[in-house]
Image 1 (cartoon, one colour):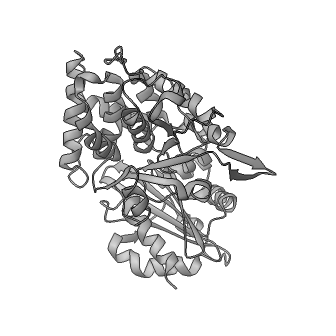
Image 2 (cartoon, rainbow, N blue to C red):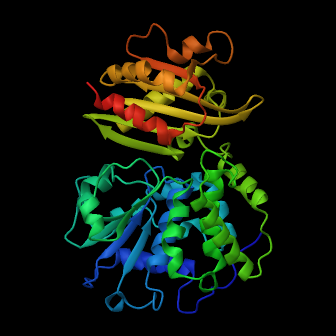
Length: 420
């Protein structure tokens, strides 16, 4: 297996050293006069979000003296994974990238460290921010949610994203770190495109190329996806592959690298059903209601098999809905079968979310070409939808328009929540 070569620029810390310094900066009580700028991806904490946050923080950090004491540095950028530390283990593809790049997944900073830092005060289980000054840059999303949004939403000063524009933080970003929103295959492509003019490929170590290439290849199917791949993605890959060539690294088997990442991402056998559901999960509050969405890279039949039965799977989803206090919950699956690429959609509503779910059915079925799921064996559809259960509202479909991912389906569900 290839690992990163020694760092190219002696004036810049290697990535592992940079992450260690970022940890010290996060946990430091010292008031420096230079605000700490935290760079965070979205709450699904997928490969694109994590790699983009680390890339942006690393490339924006002062290249001349990154290991200087905080008081003598002009900028302090701290990359943060938007998940708890215990959830790093479920991201097998991230572990694969770390092995290639020559560092450990344990080197990353997570919400666990943030809650333990001087930036946050926890009393009686309630989180509050302290008076320490921070700024935030959002990557792979443009609306801060959850506890982060409640505590630090007013401190957002930059955005780099490729999702639907929520129209937030416009003035703050103009006066701060900038606001870059563009429809591309991978947010990592935008990070590379935005910052590469400040660096030449000779000044960066190969580890940066591995960190940037991985999410772009995964999100664009190694640049083969006609629906997702853009010139920005192609340009970023060309720049990063050139970086590897300049360091005499010849294993540029793009297809092979992509297949390794895809296999790691789809390896769910060591995870529990709950871990599978929360591995790629996002959440929104809309119209006083809460929506949660999970993307799973296996078909529903796999989840049923892992659960033991359709009923056991629905018991697990109901428990998850209750733990997250959700009004509407969706699982979107992706898989490759004999008929080619396939998407499925399971939608479950609580009492408060049922009306919104019905609105989605009336307005979304045609656009997504939803067809009722045929099930796995006699009676499985009725069992999955729990027909006759007045307290349960569930629908299960095969999604005919496979071009529409969560990026397109989530706004439709959010729109149904917001309409009355």
